[in-house]
Length: 230
Image (cartoon, rainbow, N blue to C red):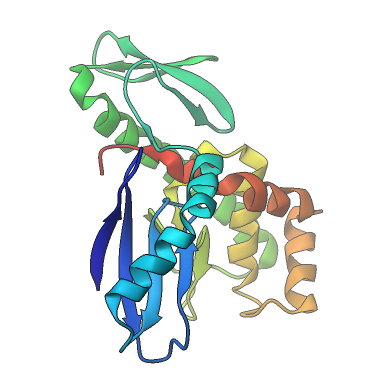
């Protein structure tokens, strides 16, 4: 892999990926983190790839603008918690306080993002464990462990051994969306597939899952725009 920068305002970093399987140039923009990747045949001269990129520059800039810039978490920024936007404010004492319209984060401002991220992960584990326990009890199948990650390609997963994994960023989404993802992954304890039988289990555990699934499809990528300095 290599990287080039497309000049302009702003400049765009593009990762060049050579592939033995590629038969043509392919440009991809991740809606999750805004990364731009240009896949090219292994023996294609780099100059041809750069020319192709320049031809696609207006398309690329339009899509980057539509996605929006990353939001670096700091005092004054609004961050959603359980689907409600809360302004980050300086707090007093030792504990972070959740208010109807704000998050009061004590300590130095340059540590606010890291401290808030830790608090959000703790809250996410609490909410996801409660939802997973409830759905697993209704299903009659226990899970073996629960882990949190900052995954970019999926909101959750279930292993063949019964381990559940979730993105901690689900705590930024409305509670019904988090609950749907928990029901979805717990349903895999019974059906390790996405067959009609699987979706019947999800519906039995959660109810009509379609609105929550649509919310993740339409709004989920925006949750990855919040950067906590990681």
